[in-house]
Length: 256
Image (cartoon, rainbow, N blue to C red; front, top):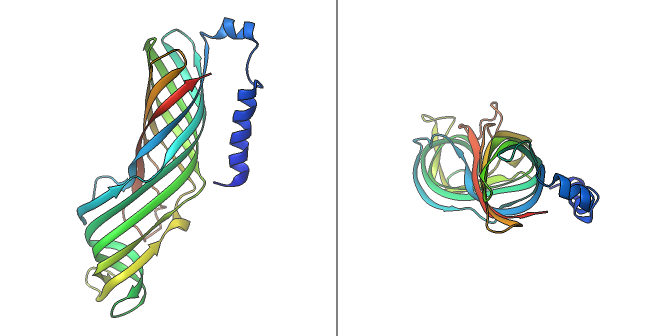
C-alpha cells in the first residue's frame, strides 16, 4: 500500500481513539443508542477466480489462502433499535496461491526452458501455479439489522481502490500452442507470467456481514464479499476469463 494513504488511515484511527471524534461522556450517554463505533480485524479466506470455473481447468491440485486479512473502522447510525446504516474505512489484503492442471488455457508465457524460449501467446496445457496478492482501501455502505441485542446483520455494497497489485505465476510440464489451439506446439519445461500491471485499480461489489456479541464490548464477526468488477480490463488477453474477488473474512470486533 502506498505510504501516504496508509498514514492517512492510521492518523484517522489515532485521532478517533485519542478522543478527537468522541463525544463528551454526558453526550455519549445520551446518544449511545443511536451511534455505534467499532474496530475489527479478520482473516481472509477465498480466491480471485473465474465464475463459473471454466472447463479448461481440469484439476485443482492445491489451494493456499496465504496470510491475508482485513482491518477496519466502522460507524453505525441506528434510527430505531432494530434498523440502521453502517459505513467506515478498511484495509483489505486478498491473497491466494493455487496449483492446477489445465488444458488449452488461453494465456501469455515467458518460456525459459524447452525447445524454444521467448514470449508466446496462445493456449497452454500442463501444470499452472497462480499467486495473487491484492491490497485495497475499502469503503462499505450497508443496511444494518439488529433483531436481538447479541446479533447484528448487515447487507450492502462496497467500493475499493487497489493499492498493491500482484498477479503472477508459472507454467511447467506441458506445451503452448502459439497463436491458438491449432498453432505451433512449443514445449514448456518452465515458464512464467506476471500480469500485475494489468490489474484494475478499483473493485466494487456486494458485502454481507454478521456480528455476535459475546460481551458488552467484543464480538465475533464474519464478512462475505463478492466483487462484481472483473480483475482485468476487457482488452487484456493474458487471462481470457473474467476473474472476481470472492472472499470470506472471520475475525473479532471491539466496540468503542
